[in-house]
Image 1 (cartoon, rainbow, N blue to C red):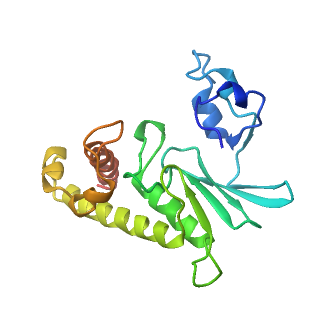
Image 2: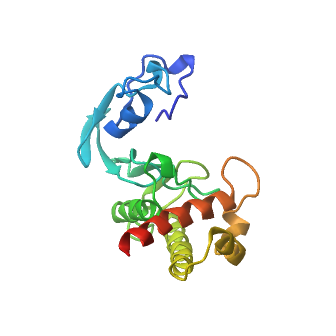
Amino acid sequence: MIEGGNMGQPYRGAAILAHENVLHRMSAPTGQQAPFPTEAWPTDTYFTKKKELFFNGEAILILHQPSAHTDGDSIVFFRRSDVLSAGDLFVTTTYPVIDLERGGTIQGVIAALNNILDIAIPKDKQEGGTYVIPGHGRLSDEADVLEYRDMLTIIRDRIQDLVKKGSTLEQVKAARPTLDYDGRYGATAGSWTTAKFIEAVYRNLAVRQTKSQ
């Protein structure tokens, strides 16, 4: 899997398959300057909910996960190997990046994790169980995804409750809704901090709250 504009010399000429939303984001359908070089664009796209392939003697299932990390995410399941590539929908090192400007939502991330859980087989049901490859971090299994999903659901519910009470972003941050998970997933420096995660969830839920009124 080749992400974004990470197209070093060894990858030139490689086939890149992605949901059509990825091509829209990386190219310039409006006629403006494209944000990524053409070498980084997908060479093939799909627009349906899923795409099935047969490659290297193995059936492969690709499932679009709308409005999650972005609006172009996919999970890839290698059926014979029983390996699932989750991309940045699931990581073991930080809270998930929710890119609001590119169609990301907290509910979409949770829904994507639920879809992964629907596919993944636990260790006690099959020897070794399904291997889940995260976007960042260690090799994982169904239990790790379940724990991550539950963590995000709890944090979402906490922030949602504060939004319903009319709390401001600063008040939500002061309430520290991620406190009991910060030791494992939190960060105070870098490109994606705990504060940025809380802000993304808050802004996403605040918009939904406004629309529902």
